[in-house]
Image (cartoon, rainbow, N blue to C red; front, side, top):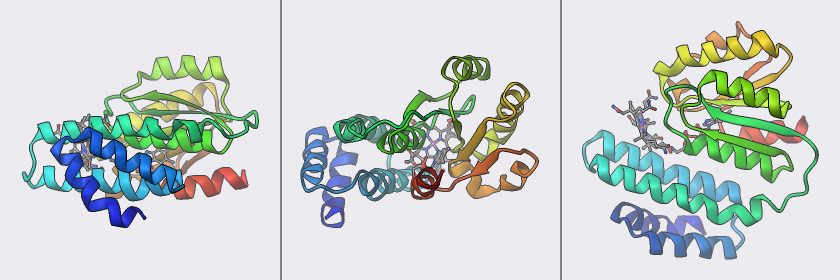
Length: 210
Ligand code: B12
C-alpha cells in the first residue's frame, strides 16, 4: 500500500504540499497500515532520501527544513492509535544527547514505547544532561533511550552515559541512531547496562520480550 503511494508522497513532500501529504497519510491510516510501516517505509525512507538529495546539492537547505517540518507535523496524525494502547505501568525517557538536533528518530522511538503500553517521555533535541538527570529523578523510568545521529556526538553520548550511571548505576540505557553507522559501538562495551538497538523493529522485539 505504501509502495504505491510513496512517489506521490515524496513529490508532495519536497514541493511543500502539506495538504497532499496529510491526505495520503490519512488514507494509509484508514487502510490500517501499521504505525511501524508508516514510520519506516514512508517517514524514515523519505527523510533519508531528502538527506541524500541535500548532501548532493540537489535540494536546498530550505527544502530540507520544509520537508522536516512537514514530517514532524504528520507524526501527530497517528497519535490516536499510539495513545490508545492499554498502559502497563512501565516508563521510558527518550532524548537526544546535547548538541544533537536530529529529533524525528527519537520521537518515533518514544511513540513505539507508547504503542506498547509504556509511558514514553520524549524530551526532544539537545537536552542538557543536568536537565535529563532532573527528569530521571522525577519520573524514575524503567529505561532511558539516547539518540545520536552524528558520529561526532559520541563524546557527548559517553559523557551523558557516565553522568547518568554515576547517579543511577542500575538504569537500563538503550542507544541508537545513525551516528553508529560510522562506528562507536565498541565504546559502549565499557558501560554496563548500555545496549545499542539499530531500529524501531529491534526495539519493539526488545520491549515485547522485556
Ligand atoms: C532533517 C535533518 C536535519 C535537521 C534535523 C531537524 C529535526 N527536527 O530533527 C537539521 C537541519 C537540524 C540537521 C542538521 C544537521 N545535520 Co542533518 N539530517 C537530517 C536528515 C535529512 C533527516 C534526519 C531524519 O529525520 N531521519 C529520519 C529518522 C526517522 O531516522 P533516524 O534518525 O535514523 O532514526 C531511526 C533510527 O536511527 C533509530 N533511532 C534513532 N535514535 C534512536 C534512539 C534509540 C534509543 C533507538 C533504540 C533507536 C534510535 O530509530 C529511528 C526510527 O527507525 C538526515 C538524513 C538521514 N539520512 O537521516 C541528515 C543527517 C542526519 N544530517 C547530517 C549532518 C551532517 C548535519 C549537520 C552537521 C549539517 C551541518 N553542516 O550543519 C547538522 C548538525 C546539527 C546537529 N548538531 O545536530 C548527516 C549526518 C552524518 C553523520 N552521521 O555524521 C545526515 C545523515 C545527512 C547526510 N547524509 O550527510 N539535519
